[in-house]
Length: 233
Image (cartoon, rainbow, N blue to C red):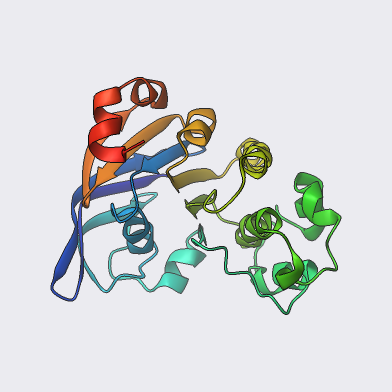
């Protein structure tokens, strides 16, 4: 699936929070959206999912305009969101979390429960544990797997490393590289530059709702001026 965003503006009430955002994700590509807290990353992803009421501009999925569509219609087009804070169902087991997220009526099911446990062996070991019993890293992997069983062709990930220890981030990176090999395009909203450098083909830097930089992650990692001005990293 291809994503093309042009001139995207978003507002909450009288607060204008995204300003003429342009970005692209090509089929099978992983792209990063980087910025400090409050820069507009989450709003951008929520806007792509139709979760922000006041939008203008253009968001096209495989050429189809989605501005004005409800979130569930956008999901049916093939977009999956892994939300910030994971939000797994604590009283349900891992298996039950996956079952409730299955996309009904999918003609070709790529992400069966068996495939999920093969790609994410971390989950296979805790498949009958309740979501509330899992570690932060296990919950994050479950949140990703739960989005995948909806059969997305574009996966939006909102701060997947937030609150995770460095060793857990490393494990998560390994899991995401496995997802990359399965084919869905990914838009990764993230602050962890090491993970971005490992996974992303291109990166956008967003600051105060404006895209300030676009290019290869390696160039971003080596540009102290951009990092100091827009990332504080």
